[in-house]
Length: 385
Ligand code: SF4
Image: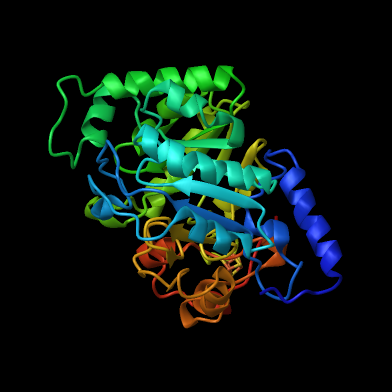
């Protein structure tokens, strides 16, 4: 699959070092920049498995909300999936997502835990994307094989959880704040047990004015990292009003002014670039990367990562890709799908690279939301990292 620049052994030693390094602001193994230059084309170093489309919540910002179900059928076996993942010898990281990957004990026992155990046995860095509202024992039963417990946290107060988490639910429970209390207790318990809990906040008109309060809450609960993204306008979230770039910039500045210095702030799908013709955008980009304990992650989706459904075998560029499947592992390998994706017109259009800014270009949804007319191949970083 890969076209090696030099000694294949050397490349594999480099990939092994990436797996072994401690996760920190200085080493984020999910960032596709970590393998730039190892091969003449981007390496597939990350696979994200959607283990279920069931979930106990129906959040207003859910980027996969339209595919959520209450019952589901498995059309491929775990063995079929693992055989395909086995073929990818360049993997560094591995994630499980949903839906809610701990939705039932059966799902944890039969799919989620076996996948995480497989990934850890290969020495991969692992992440679970979860709403953390299930009983604590479910998370304790997988914690040993998880490097990053990734959660959503958009709640300055319990009433906001009740409003957001049941936005598209058929029934709202009598005590709609109960699951936030459980989530908070789970964060504390897992953080105290040494787990790396990373909380993501989506920047919306609801969270932007109170982003510093949300950050303080996340820090107080014991999360080690706060991940910040603009809204992904997909599925349920596509019905929300997008914040403007000016509103996002103001929120980013307010957060950094009031942040806890001990919490790593990771900006993902960051919509401001070193090549921007707007000097304020360039200045914001420089300001962010100059802050201690703060990083901008290059977008993994389609740059070093593919998403696969463990239910159907469909492969997507991102778990919420509006593109639809770009292949299926019952018919071909991840390598074949990856090569086809990299040579597609769409990938070529927004896969740019400026070494001076250590930047690999914008996220596809950011392009569609804010920069539809930009020719990224004609741009170049105007400030450096
Ligand atoms: S890599 Fe692309 S998005 Fe990043 S600074 Fe260069 S031209 Fe801009």
